[in-house]
Amino acid sequence: MEANGSLLAPEQSALAPAATKGTLPVRQLVAAGFGNLIEWFDWNAYAFLSVFFAVQFFPKEASPTVALLGTFGILAIGFLVRPLASLFLGKISDVVGRRFTMLLTVYGMGASSLLIALSPTYVQVGVLAPILLLLARVIQGICIGGEYGAMAAFAMEVAPEGKRGKMAGLIYAGAVVGQLVVVLLVLGATWLLPDADMRAWGWRIIFGIGALLSIAGIWIRRGMVETAKSNDGTKTSLFAAFKLFPRQAVQVIGLTIGFTVMVYVWSSYLPTYAYTYGGINPKYSLIATALSLVASLLGALIAGPLSDKYGRKKTMLFAGVVLAVGTIPSMALLTQSLLALIIIQCAAMMVIAMLQASSMPLYSEMFPRKVRASGIGFPYSLTVALAGGTAPLIGTQMASANIGHLFPWYVAGLMVISVIFYATMKETAFKPLPE
Image 1 (cartoon, rainbow, N blue to C red):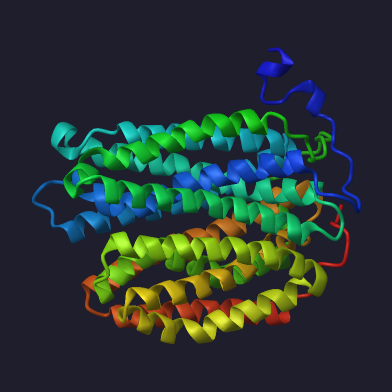
Image 2 (tube, rainbow, N blue to C red):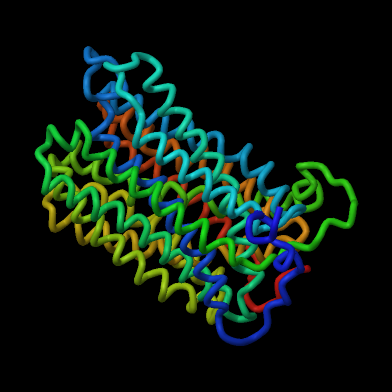
């Protein structure tokens, strides 16, 4: 196959030069960031739109709560396939290349969004409807699972010394833009379309837009350089990174468990939580979510350079303590008013951005290049699946069991675990990436 028709173009197979002090590589930043934007767009579209399409994929006699539990259950399954996918695709990224893996994930996300957009309803095809929805979420889970490790390794490997935090902040800001676009589209659709039309077909348009964005992502990522070292013929197992670096793998889990729950609770699940306990109309809670994403974007742009200047440890410890202490009283105030929701959610998302912008370089600074993608990807995806991905489902089940008041304690408790890891970790910001 010709170079311009291959995932691994010959002119891009050579290892990119090592990052040095200087300006950020804009083209590579866009390649990593725009693909990440697409994947967060597609991933979050499901969470934000589930309240509209849930009843279409389950029997009519099922209550809205049961249907919502079903869609959140499928959401959780999408998370559960992520660790296995990260294990295989992380290994592929380390052996075959970052570029190949990151192109593959964008292809898959586009295909899964298109499948959801075109899926028939339960009335039309019966049990096949939720099966197709599950298939789409499994594909998304595979792609997201393989994306993070490869993308984080690639981005930090092309970032100049002393600017890895800034690079991570910009990439996270791109991911926030993807989420923000979803929120604005959902918000616009709910205001422009009657509720019946939104539930019947309006949600399909947004998934279709996600599929179209993937085409742009494929085109942009074809111009990426390669940063993974070529395979020297040495055979290693899928678990090589964890056999060689078990302490670092455990650290990734501990560092991630608290803030991944915070991310999915405060960004994806909060509209449902605010509606359940505060009676706030989802249309209005989406306004709060949109504003909070703007705050998160600003937080990421500020926090990235701060972690370069002051270190990952100080930045993450400060943010972790604030979230651990503030979550329970903050979530108690969400029943007061829309204004309270906006202020609290914006503040929480800005603090969470400090963890997001600091964690990507931190993880990359813990592993050498030859196992970096797999070393990051599997423990990170495993933690996100077990803690972050199940948070909406756990919150919904607690609400249905009339113990929803315990949910903030659950979230804060997991954050405390991560704070312990932040307090005991070594500082890595001021050293070169290990080779």
